[in-house]
Image 1 (tube, one colour):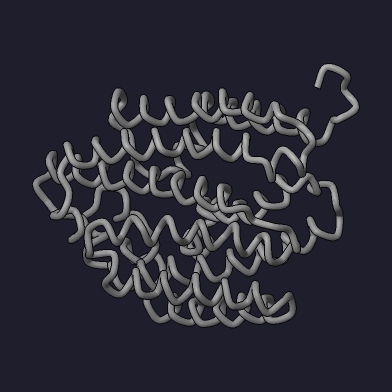
Image 2 (cartoon, helix red, strand yellow):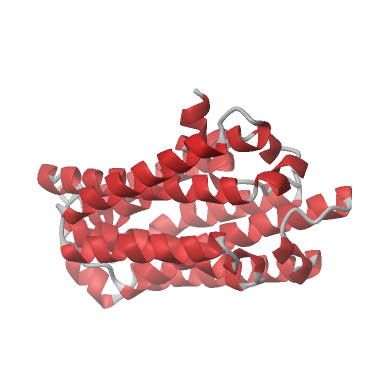
Length: 293
C-alpha cells in the first residue's frame, strides 16, 4: 500500500483528460481509438507518477512541515529514498517504452510533459505565476497527446478551455497555500511569497469569467457546429457554469481549495454537474436520432 501511495493513483484522474479530444470528436465509441487512448493513459500515469516521486524526494524536508503532505510515504519514512529512486527510473522506462510503440507525436508530447515537469520540480515551481502556468500547460499537453494517439483533431478553443480550467484550479490551490501560510505562519512553498489573497481572488474571478466565455465560443464556433451538425451545444454551458460556481463556493465559502482531484472525488454537486454535462453532450452529439434535438 505504501508503494502504491507513492505513485499517487488518485491523481491519475488528471490523465483522463487524454479522452477529451475523443469525446468531443464524436468518436468515443470507436473501440480501437478507446484502446489507443488507454495505452496513452497508462504511459502518462507512469511518467506522471515518476514526477510525483522525484518531487516528493526533493521536498522531503518541506513536506514534513506540511499538515497533510507529512503523511506522504517519503516524508513519513514509510518508503526509503533509495527504493523511491529505483521506482522512479522503472516508471520512466515503462512510460517511454509504451509511448515509443504508439506514434512519434505522442512520444514527443509525453517527453515534453516530462521535461517541463522535471524543470518544475527542480526550481520552476518557486517562480510565482510561472508555477501555475506550467501546471496548466501540463493539461494542455495531455489533450494534445490524447488527440495525437487517437488521431483526432484538437481545436484551438478546446485547447484554450482546458488550459483555462487547469489555470483556474491551480490558482485555487495556490489560494489554499496562502491561507495555510496565514494560519500557520510558515511558507509551505517558496512561490507563495509572490501571492496574496486579494491577488489570487482577483485572478480566480478573471479566469473563471474568461473560461465561461471560451466555452461558449467553443460551442458556437462554425467548425464545431459543422462537425456535430447541431447549434445547441451552448446548452451544455449550464452545467459548466454550475460546476465552476460550486468550485468557487467551496474555496470562498467553505475555505477548502486544496487538491482539485480531492474535491472532485468528494463533492457530489460537482460530480453530478459533470455527469449531467456528459449526458447532455452525449444527447446532442451522439443521439442525433432524437427528434427534438
